[in-house]
Length: 223
Image (cartoon, rainbow, N blue to C red; front, side, top):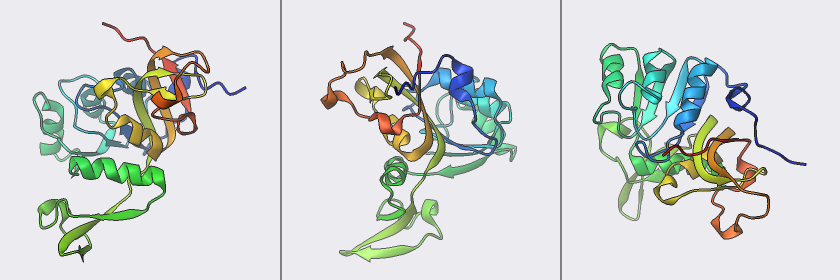
């Protein structure tokens, strides 16, 4: 019988290798898998490439992972935000690589990876420093830039409910980068607020089918 629910954080994080590309869900702090990020810190993987919406805030979570020297490169849309002190310190010191990707393009690059599309053209960013050196083409009078799919070795996602088969539902704005990241990774680890008995999730509410989920850890939401 398929059962993707793991017994603890060590089991959830097992096998994440040094040098991995890790997709981290969330939009700012909304829908961000904070407990999984802390688990990754405890697990010890180094030389990571992190893909996320932003570069963390304060000195906790994603920012803490970077402060510990475990991140080689970050790919994100908003590296500078209120409280992004760690990113700014490391980047100014030349200790962190940065690739800025427009938010819609970032989501589409991961969606493409999950769909098996190797690359696509988009007008976003054409003629700017962000796309300098990338192949371009004209479609219907609009100049477009070639963007490549962005797969991950691991995705850390946060969901509202999950079952033992790995089917996931999201709550409101928690459904942001999490679904496309779950599709784009070789190994998807989900922290869920609730475990649903098998068969009780309405199929119309399942956003991430279990085929895309490898491990589920139950971490009840703390109010």
